Length: 191
Image (cartoon, rainbow, N blue to C red; front, side, top):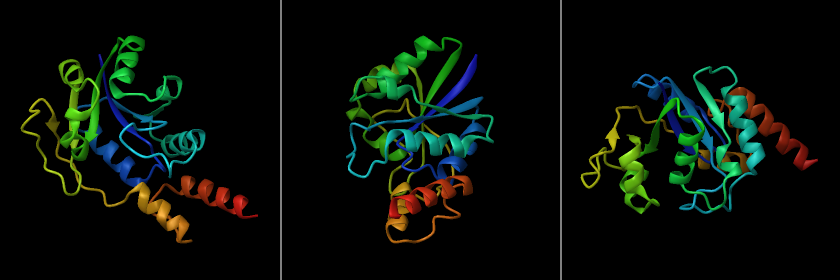
């Protein structure tokens, strides 16, 4: 069976930290990783969320030369608000030849008991957590979550959006192809 990691995110926009983390997690025993572009996280505000198709386009562009990393738009077709358990069940039904591993940050591991049907997720799927600044690498209340050793990547989508708003470069923080599309979009919007 193919062991597929599911890396959920708004990817608003995708950045080099996402890619480096995904490549690192592949080395922890996964055959591939799907980056699941989420239309809206029920636990986050959507005010700064770029449109779905644009985030999906940028994510596809970033992964075009990464054969073990793929983009999934599965959540775009599911009812909103969508919850991870619903996506996992849908994927499990559609791809019975895969074993899915949920990849989350330590920030989400700390609040995992607030997720809808979190106990069903833990009883059905492996859940791996990667380090995040300011969060412990363990959750004693949920010992089923495996904390993997991974470097911290000091780049965020929020920082990239702030740099864009300030007219600063995002080069070196996102793949060059992604930077070019974003820069062109901003240029067209300002004309």
